[in-house]
Length: 230
Image (cartoon, rainbow, N blue to C red; front, top):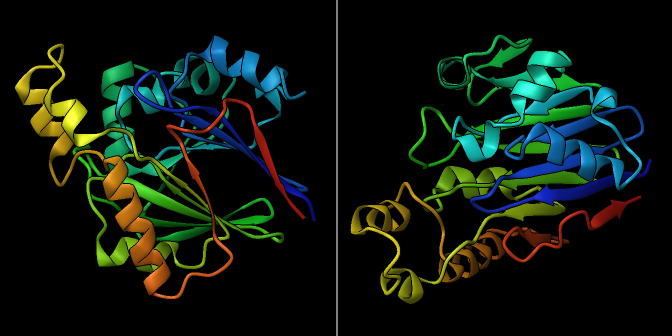
């Protein structure tokens, strides 16, 4: 089996990744506009109409704004927990084909197995994903405030880990354009990992025995660059 992963977008402008196996085509988050997602999928020879589902990590708009075009209009199934569903319906005022799961549950989606687990972030009920495929395991940690023991254990089996590490602490503190309240939110234990925090996280993953791990740091990822496992 050949499995490919493409980062369509990352960062505060919108987060979205595309995972394709032999039988299943998934988006992980849909934080770009519907038009941008369509254009970026078309650039790799794919289209939203071919999607089997969209996995949503949490309800913030930079992870969900594309659902209006993709899920509400095309009726692509959306997989998220109940609190995330409620927040999306309220903020976007849409009705989608939601397939809700309990945080911590595992479910089958095509030829993949999707494991869910709680992560610390300032959203309603944020989760990480471990998507198991015949070619390898893909971990997804987008917005993460700090590394809990649970998170470290759940990503341990990953062969590829998508990890957000999105700021330099000193540069953020000295940024005159951002209010102090926003800086506090980003730096909090339910905010976002710094570059140093990302390095520390990977060291801790290695210490608990993770092997053969490739990491895609989303702030450094090239949009539409595809990684393939066979």
